[in-house]
Length: 339
Ligand code: ADP
Ligand code: MG
Image (cartoon, rainbow, N blue to C red):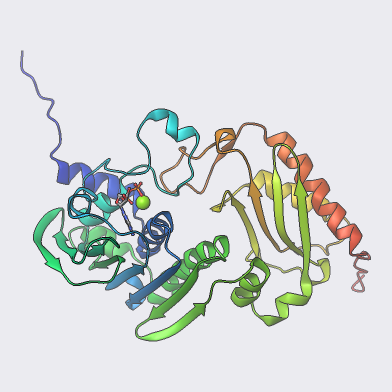
């Protein structure tokens, strides 16, 4: 008889987990921005170089970390956001797995600087491939800066798999827009190779949508508001005559988290029935608020899919709210002159 099973060393386990959490530079952007939001930041700055392949840095003015927490934040399953399994069913934070920083640090060079308001000095930590290279006491503003350099430096296959800068930048912009749309009360800025791509102050939702999608968007927005016992809806749909051939303006946020839901998308489409030309898609920017206990976010590491307790009810409420809004704005069916 011979035993052959061994526990994997932490850095190997982290590298495996990283494969799920970090697909590309945009995944790093998402994780770091979500951490900044969970830290109650009111200002978040994203700096990238070479479409994130050389640098992804997120600087926030949130609550920062103590020295001990700064070090612990890179451990796997180390989180301040949940304490017990029950907490998974009443999440008010974006994070909860305690995996992002450990995963990122396993496959990149990471420089963390952080300080809490009550402390005079902060902490700087450098980690490369899960190995702590240095830890120092530093002068730094309250909040946190995480710089991720040389992503996938130790996984050549992954690095080679990255697409052109144009494609990777588009993924990052998509991720950035989703987060910025979900949080109009936070000021965001975004720099790529030294140039300023995006800069928005704290503002209301309509202003944020217009800032992201352009001034012309303003006249096409039809407000959707509804509140029932199980679901609160707020946001906008686009007037049918402004519909697009692509699905690039379709956004659902559930409790301020961007999600994809073909089922709920269908509810909107069906509310637009008879109003859209063939091959056109409605625009929507909708915030759904539900009891955190009625959803399960823990079904995929990137958390863009969630499970609702009662999808059918949500479908019906959503469809009727959108129909009502479209009706109120007196929108005549689109006449198809092509036939
Ligand atoms: P999770 O977000 O799932 O808890 P992460 O690996 O992303 O896991 O982060 C681990 C922990 O590090 C967080 O729970 C939080 O306590 C701390 N942390 C990470 N980023 C920040 C930040 N920008 N500001 C303050 N604390 C942070
Ligand atoms: Mg996180």
